[in-house]
Image (cartoon, rainbow, N blue to C red; front, side, top):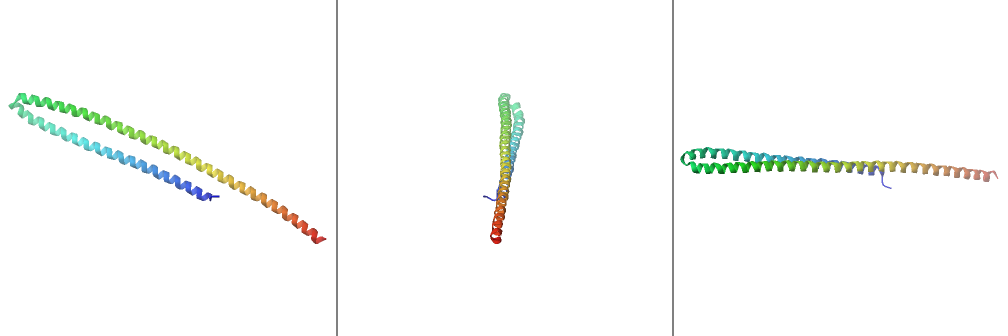
Length: 168
């Protein structure tokens, strides 16, 4: 029979390991979110830099418009198309970012729910093991009391027999 304290210690150690795994998973998720936010910040900076560059180009083109109105109109139309395309791309990026964040949150929620289920199952298993341990102890004590009673009866019978032999 395994030592009950060892089993209990092992179960407690397992629960502690599971808690550490949960904390590591949550930490990993937070680090991933931070990395995603850094990428978004970098992309936003790039977009702002591109906007500034476009604004400078428009200013330069304003001077060129005075010299060649036809060429300037063509360039303005091209820049408008570029801006529209960039806005569309930014909107798509924002939509994708939101989708990724929602998926990450849903995945995290699912994993947390699974881990909670595991914790509940482990807790129930621990309680069952404790109940079985207490039951075994009670059965062992009951058996020991019964054996003690039988031995006392045997001692009394042997004592009585010995007294009869000594009396005769």
